[in-house]
Length: 218
Image 1 (cartoon, helix red, strand yellow):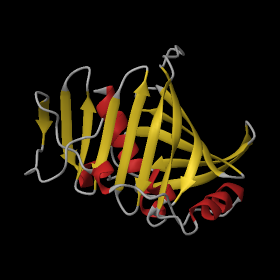
Image 2 (tube, rainbow, N blue to C red; image 1 turned 30 degrees about the vertical axis):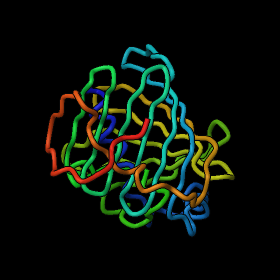
Image 3 (cartoon, rainbow, N blue to C red; image 1 turned 180 degrees about the vertical axis):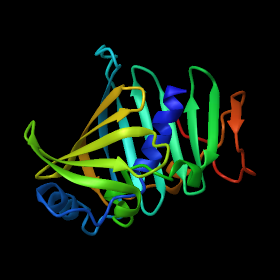
């Protein structure tokens, strides 16, 4: 369930940031997003529970493409794939041999990472405030305007090269810290990267469409 909530947050995060207050963090966001329609990179993620206990760090790759396509591959210490194809969001857990699928508009109601490829709707979905400088970065805080938000807040940290870090706290008090690296602007992304077919033998839970996409690549 935690992984599903995190998937929902990511896809929402990949669909909304714009027209915020002006300041150093917003200026860096605008500069990074200028002319950007696709981006790929690496991430390192650490989860801290409400009692302050930190889990193992995970890492992997991500790809975003305007307006609504997204892929997040966790590679270690476990494997997990999240794909948003523009219509649905797929979460594949190889260890459980399970696929969870939901309509993408359900996932996108209130979350901030299309921030990079679609600066369009921020003020409708979030209260946005500049948070000043810490850890060598300048920060924006996003607080959802949803009636039942999935997270208490999300902080986006920018360096001179763009988005470097993201921190968010969920409603149970757990904190996720994600560090980004090796951004590539407007790379050529194979269409199949955003296509997903459940692997043979996997249990599928959720709103499964009629499948016309290509199998998931290893």
